[in-house]
Image (cartoon, rainbow, N blue to C red; front, side, top):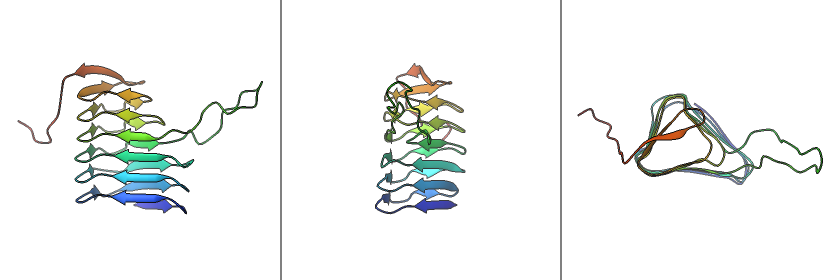
Length: 152
């Protein structure tokens, strides 16, 4: 476990959270919230910089190798205007979300309640509630679903 917490930030962890292996960087003025009963089943990478937030809801299951980041870590600049083109954005994961192995949630990702993110998916936008999203870039491949941790 490797956790770096900078000044003027928040790291809120709910009840009964299972966080066994992680690389977490919470930059200055950033906020990390992990809801009750959320479990991380292997090494995850959470990178919060540029005063943005990652919010993970309750009852989530997050598999090994998952990446979540609020920034590209470098600025992309318009040569004509000098303006930055890739502003940082928060990441939000709803309640009862399953994120499979090696998925990446990039800046601005919003995952609805009861959604499932497939293995190796790269999310760059919004995944509605009760949907399965897969691929690179991730797209909805099925809707009107939920999931259970047990096999029935």
